[in-house]
Length: 306
Image (tube, rainbow, N blue to C red; front, side):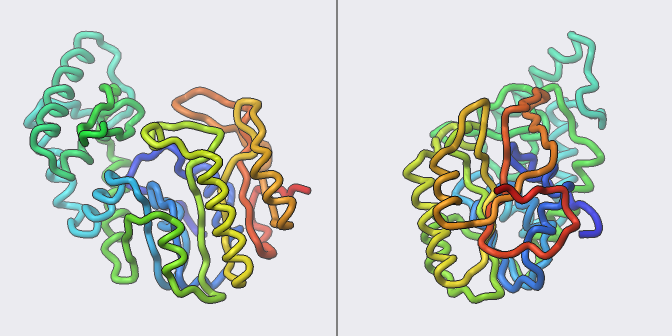
């Protein structure tokens, strides 16, 4: 990978730091179909070379974003965002967390709430995307009714965001990409896969909770379904790679450790990696990459665990 491509979808749980440490170099070479079964921000897909891509996620908001980038060019999206900024009096600065004056913050907070209320009454995917930039930690979250409910985040629409939108439109508008919103098991078992295809699995983690899986907590039954899929892929000689965690806040994922041990899968962990969430350091999380093939590329900062 020559350079890192940023996704325009700001998503907790993305693999930006791991990609910079060489995650993509752990993948097989000469991939035909790249199946991103839990695509999230699609950062991994955007940084992976393949002939064809399957982008899948069951999250409705993510699916709307994928379709938005596929159907609109970058000028349309950026123009819409800038129009809403002007119309509702949202921050026009381009530096993240640049507001120190309390009165200024209150003004922008009221503007954000006004725009959020407008969106919840007149739902539009471009407005939903615009809201994300000014929300807390620039994350999205919707209620069961579909209302956007993230609080104000003292953030802005930056030049970096504009560049990422260009990347997103260029990627999702390609004619070799298929977009789905399906259960991962149904998706994989209904695809005709061959030895040159590669399945990447970055499911929610059963021992963690984040904004994106608050409404549906991924549990051990889901893990077992995921493990069954991995074993079926392995039996069919289809290569897969899985991102997961074996330790989080001192809690050990014994189910995952047993699964890897019993099936003799390769387990890699980044060297001296420290996870950061919303600015808080969590040294007790160990993220791993699990695969069923020999990694031949040494251009990465991962250790093979025993």
